[in-house]
Amino acid sequence: MINWHKKQVERTLKSWGFSNYQAYWISFIKGLIIGGLIVYFFI
Image 1 (cartoon, rainbow, N blue to C red):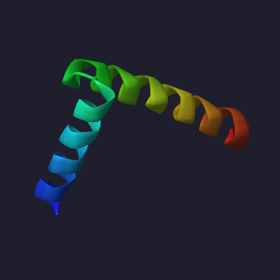
Image 2 (cartoon, helix red, strand yellow):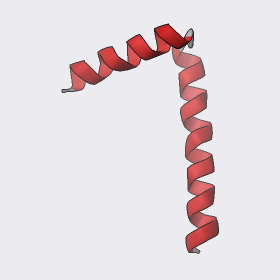
Image 3 (cartoon, helix red, strand yellow):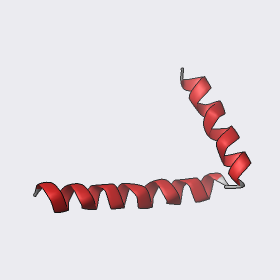
């Protein structure tokens, strides 16, 4: 399962033209946004 997921991520990044570094930043920003929404709506 883990190897399948790694291959899917690599294929997606390659098709979108993103580097691993860009993907890390996108994930970080997405986490901040989702975390901020959770705090805003539930606290």
